[in-house]
Image (cartoon, rainbow, N blue to C red; front, side, top):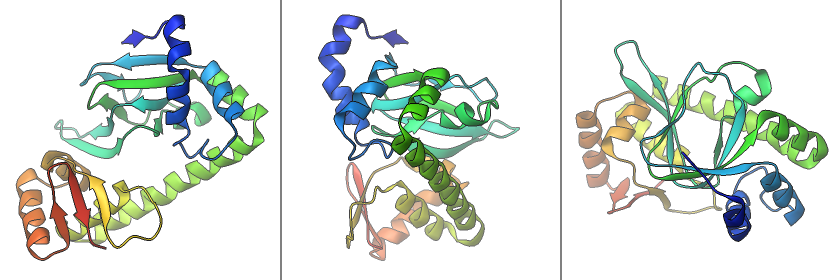
Amino acid sequence: MTEIKNGQKKDGAKRVEESLSQNPLFKGLEEFYLKDIVSRGEIKSWPDSSQIIIEGESGDAVYFIISGKVKVTLYGEEGREIVLAMLNEGDMFGEMSIIDDKPRSANVEAVSALECLVVSKSAFLEYLSRHHKVYMRFFAYLTGRLREATRKIGGLALLDVCGRIAHTLMGMSKPSGVEKVVSIERPTHEELAAMIGSSREVVSRALKKMSQEGYIKIEKDRILLYP
């Protein structure tokens, strides 16, 4: 893990604020909301494959992704990995333990080189107490997380493999208005398999079928989904 020193913080402050402005807590808010949260945290970086959070450990900070990508996972008794989410720039993680004081509920691993604004529990709670607008957005965000969890559980229980893949891809997309085609950063077959509780081979066959039937188009770095 690398910490960014004071001299570098000033140069990168604008970039950090631009990244945070994509987060649902701060999107569309005045600049002082961003400057305040940045002033309360530290910018830290990790190489890819670093373990950022371990399930069961105490939670003492919330992480806002400035650049890079992480996966949120659980492991079964036989070591099987289940991917709960893939998070990118503008997303955050570690917020649940900040609220309920309980151990971390999942693992978080860097998929690529990662840079985050890390805000301690006490600093984040104090920030929320001072900014009612962000406080209300935060609890709306948590409610959205619960709704998304319900949607995923329903999809895994009720849909076939192709349906679960489409369901998962739609969940990975970021809303940008009404569109006839949804473009999603292409996950690997292994990542998709871990997200839907299947195998890489089954996912590969399902993606081929969906592509042949015109439901998706697979490009080098993207998947185009036709809802």
